[in-house]
Image (cartoon, rainbow, N blue to C red; front, side, top):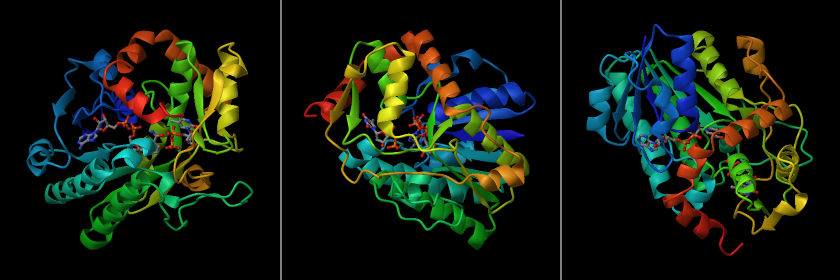
Length: 337
Ligand code: NAD
Ligand code: TYD
């Protein structure tokens, strides 16, 4: 099989490529990525020069770039996106260009080239926010109610992918997953931000009252869930992917990281809240478990310890990422607390 992986130089895309080539050495992968601030070819250094792996720099929102790269492709696995809520609050334009217009261009090209599968990677944030005491969780029938420019743009992309199935019979699948964490995550997201700040002797900034809740999914569990959907998923279907069985508020996540690193809770500081901050996400992942036999390999604490270890052992990687443009972003996001 020839796979086109969009956004393969980002966090989840690079974990997917590394996993896939190790476990499906007979397949070929073309990694198509614009290399925005979030794209980093260092993540893929270990497979550079491998004959069945190729990197092509390009933009999913550019029809010519896409037309050139999709020739001969069997499966598209679409990760490329602007992915950070806080950046979408500063400027939503790139989110619409890449996540909505880019997805539409990719869908047209997939249709024209008769790809066997178009798999779209999306987020639980499209469903909006749950109350803390709500017994319900998001499931495949939950109505869309996005509340940030990021989640609105991902919702738009999901609707387009679904529309191409109903209108043109494009063989699609969609996964909506929760917050990922693990190796190679850009330290603008809370878990790598907290770990690397603590390792640098800085504080962990926690928004608002810290009682916001996310469902946490280890990136390799996510990659294996996508593998299960590519292998056994039903065309036209959506699968939700989550990692948790209980709620853990952000402040508790920060305290767990502080404890693993032997730091003090005084290293956590409360800062100004995010506008429109979704209170809680929770995922019912019984469909993928029951129908495709997928479940997370370990619990949150085990994966969190492993993740902290990775950042401790890969200091060169994150120090490089945290230099340059990142400094300006951090200043803008956190300077007036
Ligand atoms: P990321 O920001 O780490 O990486 C995104 C990648 O896409 C980067 O390599 C970037 O260079 C590339 N890219 C951006 N715009 C592009 C364009 N126009 N053309 C080609 N490439 C482009 O993101 P991630 O965390 O790896 O997320 C991957 C996907 O998973 C996204 O679609 C995101 O919405 C979804 N998702 C992520 C999470 C999470 O917790 N990280 C959770 C749910 C869903
Ligand atoms: P984030 O990692 O940005 O992912 P998302 O917004 O997609 O859920 O944030 C996860 C949670 O952590 C969210 O409730 C916002 C919160 N958060 C902080 O408290 N401080 C921070 O500095 C960041 C980046 C996030």
